[in-house]
Image (cartoon, rainbow, N blue to C red; front, side, top):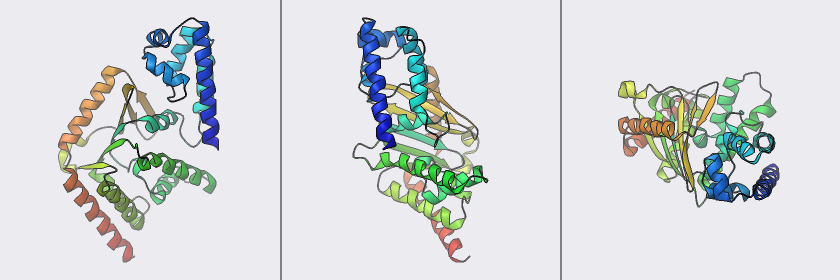
Length: 277
């Protein structure tokens, strides 16, 4: 119900955008030129098919002279207490992406996490959190993975550093279940998986996670995150650089077949360990 309510609110955002655009005597293409997006992009905002990023909402305010209305509305609608402020826009973009490429240096990416793994991470990062808060975070994490069950699911390419397999988040039983889950997704062709081995050396020394997202009718976007903050990048030159960095990681990673075998072997080791404790 909350998601439905937010969707209706975004429809109102789109209606207001169309109203103010028409009052200003601008076509979708004309407004798009003023805020540096395509006219089709503006049309998607007006139909609530797509949600603008904050900087676009701010440029719309400047172009239409709406005194911050669209920025204030954006901040109200995008807010979801289950996610960090810097990550909430990424969740919206994931739902629209046609292709997602992820690099994870230390932990399993959110789209691939099991409930047990997500719970262990949440508690580790906030050991004083109440159970209700922890479960809220876990549910939110699992909801994101629903995009992998759609008939029009995005192409998902995930490169995991080998240490992701070696750090026993939540204990051996939790890790066995988590790696078995990843293996099932890979065998079901829901994700193209590669492992970046420790032997890759300097290739693996990338700070934080990297996510690249492609869209049907919008420029690609990159997102980087460290343990304390995240940054959404849409400058074409910066995104191009991030894509080049990802290509280097992909070239240094093990093949999908060898990667899957490594994940299944690690899962088996964790399962044996769990059964003896």
